[in-house]
Image (cartoon, rainbow, N blue to C red; front, side, top):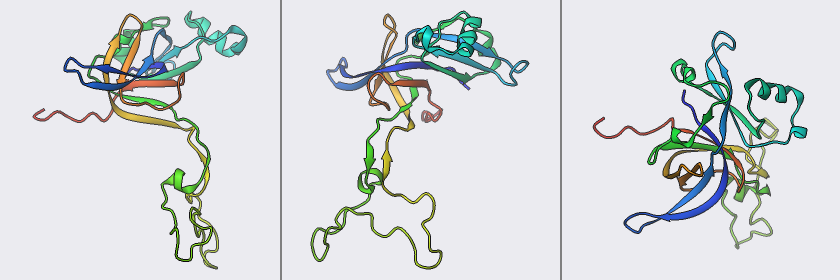
Length: 218
């Protein structure tokens, strides 16, 4: 139940603290986040804020999406997502408003969602962290094979969900409890400590952390 920002993963770099420590950070561009719609219980059954990000050519936008953005008076983007918020927060915004990077602060814990880098077709060792077979002592050409996958006559089949070879990566994933190391308000950039999902120029969703550990004595 909190508002977040949509952005683009620019890449990774490092910054230095006042003590000279090197911190690896991921730069996220969250510029020009605009409100495309305010959903209310009266019209939609729940309260949410729909946010658009990025730019898309008019020829690449369907008539339905173009009409939806035109109603709000905002430019159609490459990413559209809604955030569940309380009624008080929704009342502070209206369609067409820009949600700035000031929504977050340095040191705040956040969750970042993106699409992980695709690894192609992978075996069980790389995909599921299986162990290799023995390298010697009678093991012939079975060093990296998964081994037996089924049972005998009963039940005589392979259960669904069996961990086997297949496509690895390219799935929606979330990294939780990352920390904002620095904010560039002029260029609308977030510098997040550590790595986030996705390749360069991948689209991400940044939201306040939902599993923040309570401070001692709180």
